Image (cartoon, rainbow, N blue to C red; front, side):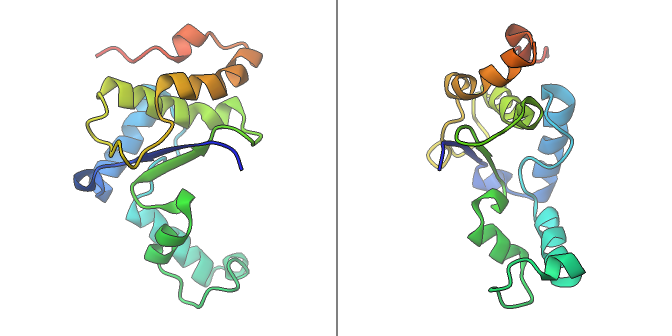
Length: 154
């Protein structure tokens, strides 16, 4: 099954505006990829619309009654939970490029002292744990690990 990094935003921060700004900040300042890291409702609605309306989407989740809602996706699939980020640290074939989001979120948590996350609901998000599982990917690709983990300057 593997070990997962799970980061859950605090309730007050689980709104699409905060999530959108955070996803943008993670890409622009912390080196994350450009797609959504934390799932906003509008992204989950897009996923639900795709599953309900697109010919390929209609083939997905055949055991679910239609229409599928964004809430169903959020409640039934941990990687689609609203206001959460999940990344498989071990037991998978992640690339350094895919792992950028986990590193960026780890650095963001460190820079903000974790004030935006629910620490009781989050797991494996500290630098030591994330580095233990992901540094080998970056080392193999010739990254400078000191620069990789450097926080952005204020």
